[in-house]
Image (cartoon, rainbow, N blue to C red; front, side, top):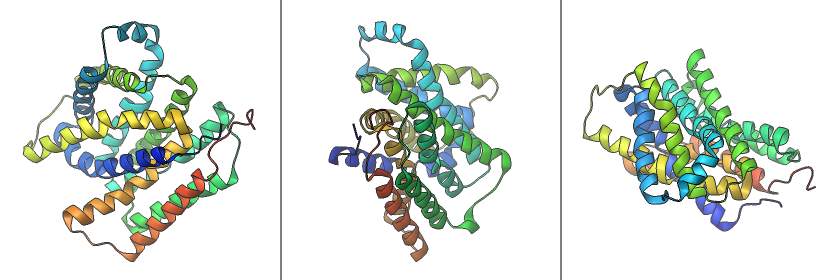
Length: 293
């Protein structure tokens, strides 16, 4: 199976990139209000309520009981831990720096796929990932990057967790992605809640804009978006799914231009071009395991 993205897969990729394109900006603005743990708790708890009401039935709890350990692993590695790490990093580094670091997710997915899924090494894919990272750096601008050791390491760990968790989910190959999205969100909420004792939820500077931003992050960017996201992991694999991380800043620029009337520079357009070329190179031949090859 080549796992080459179909037209529907590309629609999911572009759609998720568009939704998540503004997330780093909203995280940057809401994390100081609620605190890193508080913001993650609010995002997860609201998303859990929405997904739970929509996709969890009474008969599904037997499935949850039989698969509790992998559900908690997915909730921790794919949601709770990276959410916290990026929220923490947002207090010390800017959104552009987080976007570049988050863009390393495909590299981690590529390495872990070879290690644990026996995916065949493809030079074209690796070059595509590197091209995308160069494009991200050009897009953001070296002068705009901020380096705070603790924050940068936290964001890198977040990107690594995304990479390994996607590989883990692909290996498990759960059938009902809607149910997995809902129960893993519940698991992540359960895991993050005790940490509120260490970093209590705050409401400094709460206003209507912050409330609406949080609802957007929770309902759309965290809750409903995880259904096509998990669908992509199942259908095209970790590497092809992870290239969303490189497209997110491109859509961030688009929304800033449309909604905030921010200017688009030639440097940013060059960065976008390199990112798109890198994404196409990464997905040109799909993914094959060495055993299948």
